[in-house]
Amino acid sequence: MRSALSQNRVKTMADPYPSRRTILGSAVALGVPSMAGAFPGSDTQASIMGRSDGRWSNAPKRWRVEPNGELTLVTDQGTDFWRETHYGFTRDSGHFLGFPTGDAFTAQLRIRGRYEKLYDQAGIMVRLDERRWVKAGIELSDGKAMLSSVLTDGRSDWATGPYAGDPGDFWMRATVARGVLRLQVSADGRDWPLVRLAPFPVASAYRVGPMACTPERAGLEVRFSDLRITAPLGKELHDLT
Image (cartoon, rainbow, N blue to C red):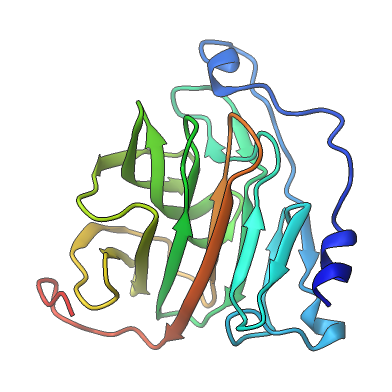
């Protein structure tokens, strides 16, 4: 299955996206449509991280399922999720494998990768549609691997901060309930300091799962594992377990 999955996704990229630096300051917005494809598990009974109900938005050319169910992917050229703010463009070309949820949930995920170029990023994403989503994880900025989150409701914001743990191996957790988003990070899967608390659109269902982008290049390899999607934990804000 591994070779067949990889071969089905190897194509030539003819028109790589221009860099953020090239577009910065331009008055022209670049619109990139979403390309959502059905997860192969629907007809191969494949399982990724113990589930077979995921759905790709912009599946990378190279990805595979490890024998233990972990997902490894390699990013395509010029991939990103962003809407308008500061740069003036819209991109919806990043890689995201979304698993369905109900109207409230907690999801957590382990992420392992090496970030080498500006804006290399990987983490967790919660998504309603191309205008309403959040992504959070590690992003390389100004030569440092930063803890980063982008919350988008029509337009994107961007919040970053230093990360004291190992950026090459960390966990992210997202809890959504009653119009509130809670993001947490962990270096060991046990202690979960708060990253962000914010309003989030209320909906009857969401998609959540691994996300990776490389706006300035291709070739970031990331491994995702330890996916858990449960009812919202309902813990107090300062309960970091």
